Image (cartoon, rainbow, N blue to C red; front, top):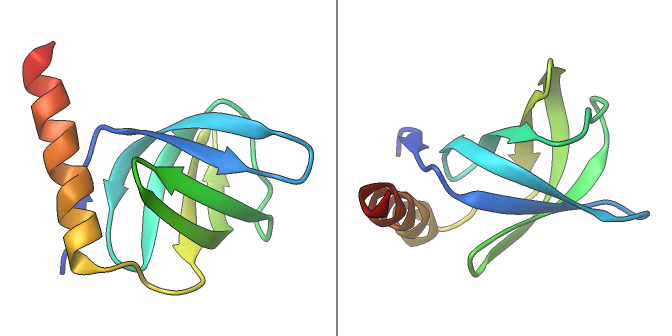
Length: 93
């Protein structure tokens, strides 16, 4: 399944704290985000958006944007659900 745009808020959990992020796009194997903190490549994080949770690793980081690779791919239905939540919220604005 290709990446889908999904303007949904996410939470990134690190050992010290949780941080807000905005999903830019998502697939079964990873997600691209705009985060409120700079994350180093190789950092392990917990990812949470709506009821989707995954362990992940930062594989790219540049100027407040980053990409995570999920340790285990998420289900196609989870990608679709986040996409539709983003579409519905976008139409409410």
